[in-house]
Length: 143
Length: 143
DNA sequence: CCGATTGGTTGTGGGCGTACAATCGTTGTA
DNA sequence: TACAACGATTGTACGCCCACAACCAATCGG
Image (cartoon, rainbow over all chains, first blue to last red; front, side, top):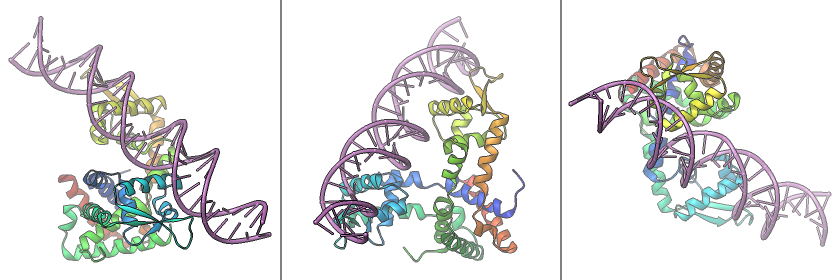
C-alpha cells in the first residue's frame, strides 16, 4: 500500500486533492443554495440550450429525475422550457440571465485552485498544466 | 471562461479527471456492495483501530451516523467493536480479516489510474508525481 | 463526592439521488 | 392510416447521508 508505481501515486494524489483536501462541492451547494447536481445542470446549459434528453445524458440521470431538476431550476427562474420547434415532443432548456449569474458564481468557486497550486513556480506550473491537459484529452477519447 | 491562468486550468483538468472522466466511486460501491462512505470508513481502519470519535472526524460524519456505519460494517463481519481499555466509554473499531480483503479490493479499484496516465513517458510521469506529491503535502498543512 | 463533560446509541425528520411503472402527446414507419 | 418508438411527466419506493434531540454509561474536575 505504501510503495506504488509513479502513475498510481500521482493518481492517488490527484484524488486526494480533489475529493478531500480541496473539495469544493459542498462549498458550491451552500453558496448557491441548491444541490451540486443542479449546479452541474446549470453549467451544462451555459454553452447552448439542451433538450432534456441531452441533459439526462450529460448528468447521467434518468428522464424522470431530469424533469424534476428542470422543474426546480425553472421555479427558481434560472432556466426556461421551450418547445423544440423541430420536434414538438422535446423541450429545449434554456438558461436565463439570472441562471447565468448563478452558474458563474458556482464556476468561480469550483475553479479556484488550492493555494499551493497557485504558488508553484511558473515553469513547474506550465509543465503540470500541459500534462494534465493532455491527460484530459486522452481520457475524453477513451471513456 | 475559456481563457484561464495555468493554475485554474490545471485545477479544472484535475477535477474533470477525478470527478467525471475517471470517477471510481460508483465502481467501488458496486464492486463491494456498499456505499462509498462505508468503503472509506473501512480504508481508514486499515492502519490501526480507531475510536468512533476518531472515525467521525476523518469521515466528517456526526456521532450518530458513525454509529450506524459501524453497525453496518459490524453486521457484515468487516469490523469489530472493542471496549477501549483506557476509557471504557469509547469503543475501538478494529478491522477484521475479511474487512481487510474488502478494503484491499476497494483500494485496488480506486487507485487504478486512468490508462492515459500510465502511458506517460517516464520523465513526464516522474515530474507530475513529484509536483502532485508536494501539492498534497502543502494542502495537508493548510486546510 | 457531585455535577459537568464526553463517547456512544437510538430515533426522527428531511433532502437528495436512483430506479421503476404508467401515462400522454408527438413523431417515424410499415 | 395504424403501430411502434420516442420525449417528457407524474408518482412510488427505496437507499444514503445529514442534522438534531434525547438518553445512557463512564470519566473528569472542582
